[in-house]
Length: 192
Image (cartoon, rainbow, N blue to C red; front, side, top):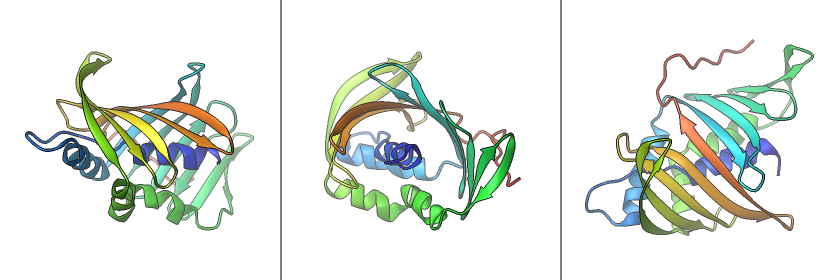
């Protein structure tokens, strides 16, 4: 699985928040729904095993992504077009279906599919970079089986960190996604 779909799947796995008095799965769903409403955000993906940054990403609704892998060229996805940085110039690259592929992770139907096989447990409160958060552990079976843990900001009700462990082609990996800049108007992604 390439880095872009893995990152977007991690994003989808980590959509979360809290609603007073609700069951953990309902609390997580409330945050998922709130995350889908975000107009923009930043995300940084780290390999938990070695601590190295895998990639960073910025998102602007409804369909714009800036993805910067730690190794390799930056790319932009704007609607159905992907632009790859080739020698300092963003060049359109044919990637049939890219708009549809990345849009699925910000779609209520995809959320319902992920949640259909999900088991959730609230595991207490922690802080992430000094921000108070409720922590949830859960297992999903779709699109790939994965065990995840999500930290939901008690202030905003949005996910601020997600760790997920899963296997692909016989390799198990744990990644951490750290979110910031929700609804930050300074995040702009324009087609070149």
